[in-house]
Length: 170
Image: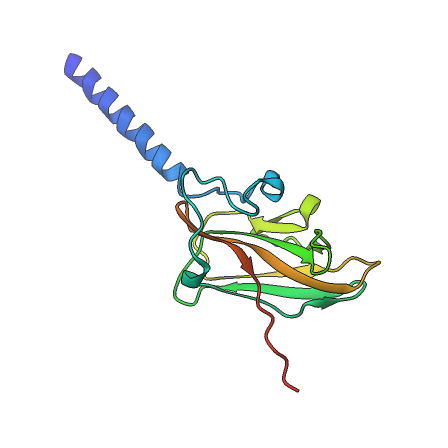
């Protein structure tokens, strides 16, 4: 009986350790709202992990435009090419005032944070691409930029990404 108890306790300790490792892979339901106002802007609370150099960013983030008028919609896409990602956090900001503006359409695998014009992942499954639609305010016009973070895994992420706007042919 004593031997069985030791085996049970050893198994329980291993099981708890595996639960901890699994939970540390990423926030399964996206960034919390306080991500908007932390001292390290747009960076996740991932322990000792720090943002990677943008020069090593393996993802492409593009916006279909950067000029908005009342009710304008702009599409923003994260594309991984050969590299998958698990999470993201994007904000829309006015290019002149830097304030949060507009809102995002929520899709099945996203959740929005209206308090700071943000969208984040709603699951931590591997993603090759994610596309979002931003809605401009109904009473303003100007220029917008999209900034945020892409998370490859708990310890590897890139922050302060700014979506590129492809040049339009003349």
